[in-house]
Length: 163
Image (cartoon, rainbow, N blue to C red):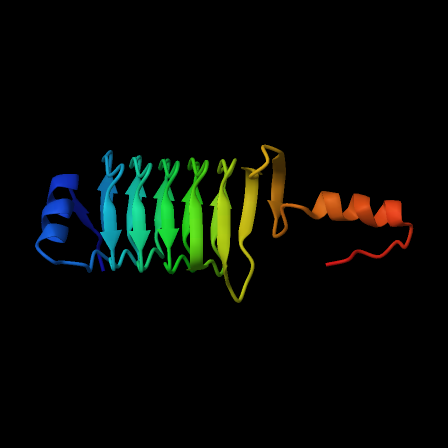
């Protein structure tokens, strides 16, 4: 099944007309900053170079690929991000609330000031990210704070990691 390329104008027109199913679309070089979108389905969609800063997404299915997207100051609430992929994205000060983050992938992403709150059956996966406190974490990990846990375990002297 092929993906459908849409323009931002077409996307917003269709949304305003009541359409909510945008699965498998491709949206590129668009500006959706400050938009408020509710109940949209982006399963299998791909967003490339889209400005989503300050966007408010509620009750959406965001199982999509986001490549070079700006989510700065975004509010993502009660959304399904299961198996979503964020490549080279800016998520500074983004906020997720009550979201399914099962196996969400963050690759070369800036999470400085972000609040990723949610739940999931499988952990998020991180590659070369800047975590919320500004510390760069190189390579792959499931746990952005593993180095601190190891250091803390060593200072306790018990030699066991407390997870």
